[in-house]
Length: 137
Image (cartoon, rainbow, N blue to C red; front, side):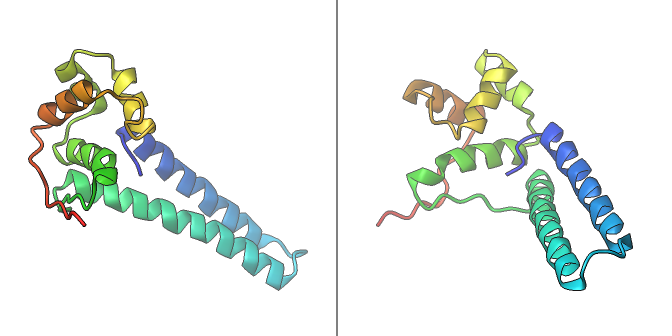
C-alpha cells in the first residue's frame, strides 16, 4: 500500500523503468519466444500490481473509497487510509500529534505494531476517525 507522495512518485518511476525493460526485451532477437513471453509476463505482473496501488492511493485521496473495518486487525490500514482520504500528509499528522514526521512514518511502515494504546487513541482522535462498520463474529 502506498502511504505517501514519496512512495507514490517512486512507484510511478519503477513502473516506467519496468516498461523500459520490457521494451528492451522485445527488441532482443536471441531470446527464445517462450522465455521472452515468460519474462514479459513477470514484469507486466509487477507493473499491474503497482498500478493497482497507485489507483488505490488516487481513489483514497479523491474520497472515492469507503473505509470500513471488518475486525480490529484492519485498524492500522484504516488509520492510514483515513489519513490519506483526509488529504493529510504524514508530516501534518505528526504536527497534530506533536511528534516528528519520521515517527509517523515508522508507525505506518510497521502497521502501528509498536504503538501504545494512548498514542493509538491520539492518532485516532487526530484523524477525527469515527467508528466504521465493524463486524464482530
